Figure 1: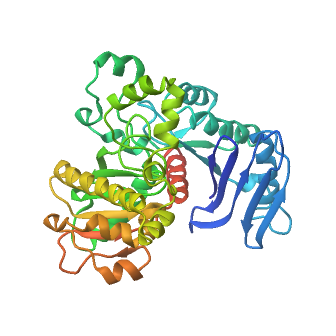
Figure 2 (figure 1 turned 60 degrees about the vertical axis):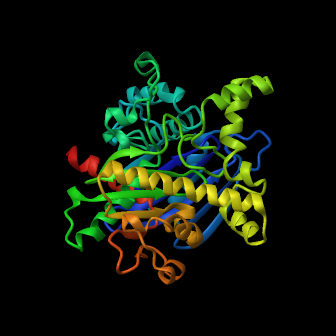
Length: 404
C-alpha cells in the first residue's frame, strides 16, 4: 500500500508518501503560508529527483492539496502515476478526547465530532479538520484515517488522569489529563520493547519511561506497552519545562498575575505558552542549542534554564519509576532527546540509585537507535529517533487490514 501521512497546521501541510510494505518514504514535503493574504505561499517537495521548491498562492488547504497531489503525480518526478495508486491517507489529529482512543476511519459524522473537540485543542483540531476535509473532497473514494495524539494515553487509570477539582468539571467539560505526543511515545516504546526482548524481557512486563524532548516535551510511564501516566495534562502546557511553555507551576500564580497585570485569559495563556519555558527563564532563546552555547559562555540565566529543564525531567523519572514499580529502560527521543548529549548526561546524573548509568563515550559518539548505557547498568538507556509518520502509516494500514 502507498499511504499519505498528513499533518495539517493552521497555515501549513506537512506530508509524506510512504510505501507501507518497505516503509520507504517515497516523497515528502511542506506547504506553508496557506491562506496568508499577503501571499508568499511555498511548497518544498522532496522525491527521488531531489528537491523542488514551488512558489504558489494557496487560498486554503484544499488548494494546497491540489498542488501537493500534482507534485506527487508529476510525470517526471512523481512517486505515483495517479492519485488512484494511493490506498489511504493517515491524518494526525491532536485531540481525541475520551471518545477517540483508536485509529478511526473518517466520515462526515466523525469530522463533525472532531470539530466539537476543538474546545480542548483550539489551535490544533480545527487545522487538522481542514486537512481531512481537503483530502475528502479531492479523494472521495480513498479511506481517510484519523490517528489521535491523545489515544495512546487512554490506558491511564482514573486516579492518574483526574484532577482534584469539583468532579462536575470533569463530567461537564471533560477536565482531566489526556496527554500528548502519543504517536511518538508509542513508536519508541515498541522499539525499546524489541531491544529489551533481546535480553529476555517479555514485552507485556517491560517498565519503560519514554522522554520525548523537543520544543514541546513530555514523559510517559509505560507498563507492558500501556501508558500509566504522562506529564502533559488537559493541554500541552503541563509538565516539563519546554521551549516557550512553563510546564508545572502553582495555579494560584495565574490568578495572582491576572490581578497584578489586569490581564484577560488570552494574555495569561500567551505568557504560559509562548513567553515562558527556556525562553522566559534564559532570556536568550527557546532553542536548546542556543541555551547550551550561552551556558558555555557563562550566561547565568541560560545555565539556570538548562539545569531547570534537566532537573524537572529527573524528578519525573523518579516519580514514574515509583508508578511503574521499578524500571527496565528509559528512552530519549525528539529533537533535544536525540541530539543533545549534554541534556542526556545531565538528566542521568544522580539517578544511579535507579540503576541508571550512562556511558559517556557512547553518549557523545553514537547516533540512534543505540544503547548508550554503561554495560554494568541495571537499567538500559536507549537513544531512539522517533518516527511519527511511520507510526501513523502503520496504524492506518492495521486499521484497514482489520476492517477487511
